[in-house]
Image (cartoon, rainbow, N blue to C red; front, side, top):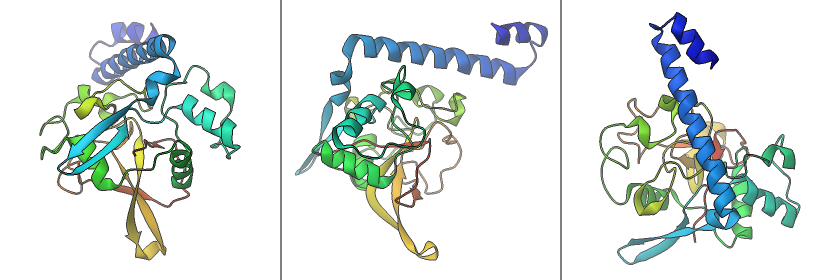
Length: 235
């Protein structure tokens, strides 16, 4: 309401119009997430998808691991929760991707769930479906295909809003996803782990550092926790 009121007095303000569009789009995605959760509950978010590649077959989570599934893991194991985590923080955001999890946290969750983290190669195969395009959907960036910095949300959506190959969701944007693959950092004196996919704060329409987004790598120390990183599991 206030954004619209402001734009009536400054209709030439392009940045204001973009912000209003982003707010309305986020509202739509949030309402869809609430409706999905009410209709389907936790079982809906435990689906896995088969990926076949020549003689290799593996299964990957359809969605990024969500808050309420991570909450179940914490209660079952007594594992240390992420910073600023409590049950009240989860309420209303049950099907948002869990964040502020370290690589260690992700590994332990996957083991508890009978799965593991994907390698970088497995993650790329699932996200790109074997094609050589710059993005999973083609060579041109499309703001309607992923929650990235271009969307203007600046925070994750409920999972399941942006579809990709094999019926997977949110393989680009929303939150970065830990993999099991190492990226040696000799100057830091420790091996980092690779993250894939970018987040709601990642500028995905610019020139990626490795030629195309399948090859773009982010990496971090195993103990790093931040509000742009989550994960999904494979088996």
